[in-house]
Length: 160
Image (cartoon, rainbow, N blue to C red; front, side, top):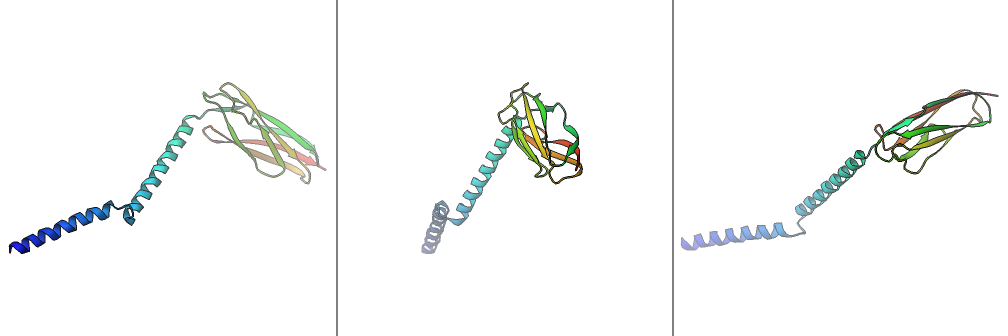
């Protein structure tokens, strides 16, 4: 009986210590998966913190006007307008991108950060070649503001 008890204790000891060694091995697939999941969660947290930091640096943009009427345009003519804006916030204003709604419009804008109280511009050039009739166009301005996107509109009537 004593031998049987000793064998049970010895086997239990081996099983217990063997389980600990297996779980401590770095090649254990379940541990590798857990490490990868932890790394993924850490990266997601870092990205979230980065976004929160970026969002905490939001500012405000104020356009002199957000629409323009070119009136009557002769077909084939290229016309342009400058939309002026001011940074009325407390952080530097960064225009990240300006996307026209169609290929007939080419934008150019202030690329450097605009300090609080500073001013900038967004110029749009409309090419009326091949376009007749009333034209309503727009560009989307992406900036470090809330909301992130601002729409500028212009129109004109193209005549042959």
